[in-house]
Image (cartoon, rainbow, N blue to C red; front, top):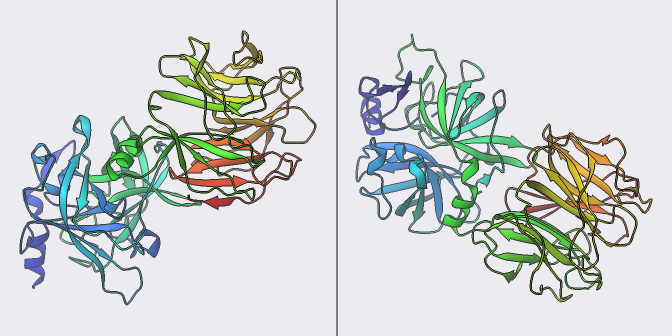
Length: 499
């Protein structure tokens, strides 16, 4: 196939592109001019639309063994024509292996399309056959990017020198601005650009735990790309956001995605377990602790938890079992007494009007041997609600102000002085520990390590049975990271578990 024919097969010429919002929308897709992608990005998928010599070529990301995610504009010029069900044209995906001498790792066809609700330019595509387990899948981001953040794009389209590269390539972008559905980005250097063949490719946040999906490429100026006029040097591009679609993506793909987490010894075996709400199916699950910082496979405890915003745990009814406290979407605070064998009894209404409480934790903050609630109000005030020992709480006490910059909290005795403390993750990604006074207040926070910005959920407990309080976090929707406490307010390198 000659270069000219390849170019035609992969997309319309620049003169056929439509200019909207000062950007060129490729009729097919947008590859990058950057380096060949490392094995870390082997979840990047090439999409071919049409039978025989494809009419379109674009990119996508592998979500699970049976599902990929891309944009509607990858599949058709008119995104409203992409409807649920069987694709209107034969659609093939191709995934290359990660080794330098590898051949095609997987080729298969798309059997079903599921467009995102609300007209978002996002589509999930179910494959007719499963992808081998040796090919990595995308992790989902728990929160979006902000202006000034950096992101990596991975695509399979053109580069600066190749019409149809053999492997995915990457480029680095800076976020210029965001809105509720869109990310405006620009290449970090003149060599970082999105080209034809890359529409629908994943935009990623790079973290210590690997890349996480935050968006999908939609359009670009294509500066520096093969076939683009030399006078075009702009590398600005746009992507559609996906960070707020995690539950929908997980539900569509049929995989677990933890939306809320808490901890406690629910089975009375002396080991701290985790309890979590799955955002994909809305069910409540228990993850038994192994006493070494890890967790076993989940067990379903209940259904219908979709309307629960926040959960925490503790012995609220005074019977030695671990109970569960939840704030529902309607603002009702409920206590579910633990049975000591992994389940919970009928709910006790502990309060109403809790709509404005965004964070929740539980410990004995006043030293009366009863478990209290710690709650962060949307106005930034930190409240303590003393427990009454019967599953309910007394009126709130303002323990501190200025907690608007706190994104997650967990409580426990982290320094071994017998008083309940608070571990808090700030929006800047740092972990602070606030030592308790035992009298409904806390000392000035002690700044710990950074790198916690991608942590989605946090809870505390003694997960390795050494009598010291540890932290467990959830990242990428399903992976537990257990940080073992040393009893002095610090924590070790995490134990990682993906049940």
